[in-house]
Structure formats: structure tokens, C-alpha cells
Image (cartoon, rainbow, N blue to C red; front, side):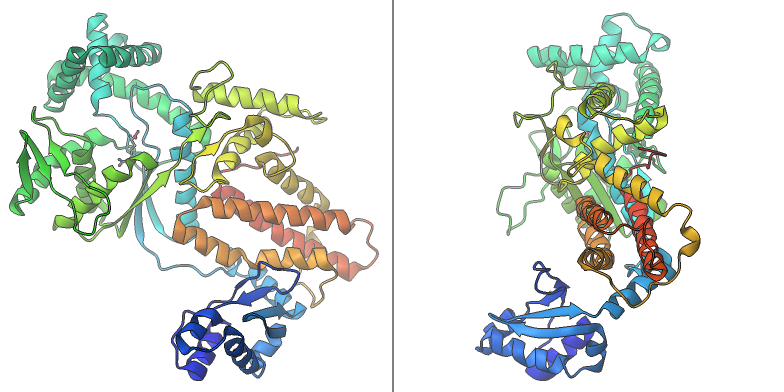
Length: 561
Ligand code: ARG
């Protein structure tokens, strides 16, 4: 109807507007609403109500509008309220049932590289690794669902100071490369890292080891390969457990081969400046509200930094894939870094046409508002977090189901994922295991429970699935149908904003309505077969949608709950 509305506004007021009829936030008054009258009124010096009356009058003459809406009226101060006809609602739902991907509008296809996960090699895996993996994986699945050509890359942090620190520690303790184990790595990194904080000269040594490693030092390379091998295995295990999978397992170190070409290109454009012995690229722009310092391309000791590897990686991605876009999912605190990198990339001929987007993430906090800790007061390793969550879930409720191991894993995992994904990715949030483990409220178990229970109701009745009739039977029924009609708008909005939280919140709303529907409409005892068939058709469409949305949110459905 947006197209017709746009035409009417054009004819009546000679205005080209982005006319959009939105889902009403007053479902008690109407289903959809248009509030663009306010803007039109401002420029024409008329009241929004007068504008709205004229538009509504025209719409009420439009034949197409009359088949879709049972009521179109302008109310003060100038909103136009729309109520859909039951038959039109059902017609749309029938199309959703019969067409691929629920008949949603798919955006133009682009080739997109998505960079997420990004664990740092040789450091223990902890709760901070959760968000970049889960949110990133969910965005990747959303992009794919929306028909994009996607290439995912884990982009491991594998050439930074931490490697120099670990090699330093190994040498100090006379550990040979073939003696390295995961346990050694996980104790060594924290130890040397705190040593470096106390003693600047040790940090200097570690920085030099890093530099020599980057330059190809044979012994350090041997250590590095072994560290990478062991650490990668552990990282793979973790991502596997979380359900994150990657097309490419590249890291910072893989981009080194491209540093000379990037350097040449920067030199050609005259972009490399010397500042205090380091090579930098200036990126400040006149319109900046805060100071954006130059990107340091090469330190005075010759070492390359995080910005260098990101530029070289982008170069590599251009060479290998010629992507339209590259998306980076990482901690919000890296905003400045990415601003610098993207600005330099825009100055380089070979990378200037790639559209880069930084998708920042807020931190996960504990109840005290500080980064999350276990009951014992540590930053938990991921395994501990899962264990603690499982215990709390099992203690929380009087479960009468004996969970199978695999089902329990899916439920526990849903607690953590849904807790995370329902929050706007940019915002920090408080991780409250007690709250998120409940089977009621906005939690993973609640969503899964709704699915499993509804599935049980319609089981064995699937042969009845058919097109919906023109009837809607009551208010709970109508609310659920209307909510389902929002799917197209929700998916497209989540896609545009790269926000899985939009989907998580919508999924929760559907589940609330499904439960209300079920509690008020007793399908099983129904005598009226038409009604029964309609309702089962409706529920089975709803379940199909929930299933797809759960998959986008990286959640798996248990066999029973
Ligand atoms: N390794 C980085 C970190 O732990 C995240 C990597 C993000 N991706 C990138 N291309 N810089 O913070």
C-alpha cells in the first residue's frame, strides 16, 4: 500500500515522500498507522489533521485499499489509522505458507566478507569471546537468509605482542616447541603478561621477539607454528561448541605477505609520513568532532601493528574475493581503530571501493555493572560459564523431564545465546544467569519450550495443513496472525541494521502470542473441523517461522522439554 499512498501524496500535495505505513503501536486502535502527515503539514503550513483527512478521503476511494482495509481513518492530531480486513490478512498468510522463505522481500544480492570471532591465539578463552562469536555467527546467518553471498573469516589475533610474551616465557622455562601443551600456554600467558606490566624492560624484550618473529626468525617461527596449532585446536573446539563456523581460518599472520604491496601503494600516493621515527598515515578530517589520530603503520623499531594487518588483510580480501562489503564484528572499544583503518583504505586505489562497516559490541557485565565474573570472582573460562549455567538451570525449576545430554546442552546454550542476542549489540548488558535460566520470561528456555509444546499439539495433525479460510475467530487468533505478517519488515530491518536483537525480540513476541493463543483456544477438544484446520495451519506456519528464526539466532531445538 506504500506505493499507492506515495502516489496519492504526490497528486494531492505535489510531494515526493518516503511514504511508509508502519505497524501500529496502539493495536487496540488499529493495525497499521501512517504518521507522515506531520512532516507534510510543516512544509505546507497546514495542520496534520487536515492533511490526514485529505489523504484518508482519497484512500477510501481507492479500490485496492478497500479490499485490504476495513477502516481507514484520520484521527487527531493527524495520524491515519488502518485496520486490515480478515480476508486480506489470511490472503497474505497463505502467500507466506506457499512461497519460498515466507514470501519476504529479499534485498539485492552482494558479496560480503564477514570478519568475526577474532580470538587471540595463546590467550585463555573466556567469557569475553562469547559475543563476537555468537553475534557474528547470527549476523552471518541473517545475511545468508537474506540471500547474500557470504564469506566468513575468523581472523585470529595471531601476530601480536601476546605471541612474543609466550615465546619469551617458553624460553625462560626452557620449554622446547615440541613440549608445548594447552595447559602450559594457559598458565604462561597470564604470568608473563603481568610481568610485563610490572617491568617495562621485559615488555620491551617481548616486543622485540614479536618483531623478530614477524621478520621470519627461524626459532621463533618454529615456536609460533606450534603455539598456533595447539591454540587453534582449542579455539576451534570452542567455536564448534557455540555453533559458529567459518569458511576461512585466517589470521593476522596470513596478511603479512601483503604488507609490502600495501606499503608500495601508500608510498605511491605519498601517504606515509614519518612521526617520531614511526611511519604513520594521517586520517583526520575537517568535520571530525573528536580528534582522530594518525594510523601507525610501522613502529620505529620496524614492527607492524594491528592497523597494518587490517589494511593488509583487506588487500588480501580484495585480491581473493573482490567483495562489495566487509563487515567487522568486534568490541565497541575498537571503534577508533576501525575508523582509522577504513579511512586509510579509502585512500588506497585498490581498496577504496570496498564498503567497510564496523559492527561494535558492548561488554557483558555482572550484576555490579563491571565485566562479568563467576561466583568465585574470576573472569570465567567459557567451560565454567556453561557448567555454572547448567547447574543453575537444573536447580532453578522443579523439572520433571529427564533431559538427555544433547538436549540439555541445547537448552543451556540457548540460555546464554538468547540472553546475549536479545540485547542491542552495541549496548553492554548484565548477564544474570538466574534470570536467563528460567522457563518463563524473555529467556531461551521459554522460547524453546513454546516451540516444543506447540509442536506436540499439532503433531499427527499435519495432514490437515491447507490454506487458511477467510475467517479469524477471536482476538488472540487475530493478534498472532498480525504479528506473523510483520516478519518481512522485521527481517529486512534486522538485515539493514545488522541487529540480531530485532529478531530475538520479535521471536519472543511471537512466543508470547502463541502461548496466549493456546491458553485461550483449546484446539484438541474442538468439534468444528474448519476451525480446527485453520488453527493448525496457522500454528504450523508459526512453527516454521520460529524454527527459521531460531536458526538465525544460532539456537538448536531439543527433542523434548
Ligand atoms: N583479535 C581482535 C581482538 O581480540 C579482534 C579482531 C577483529 N577483527 C579485525 N579484523 N581486526 O580484539
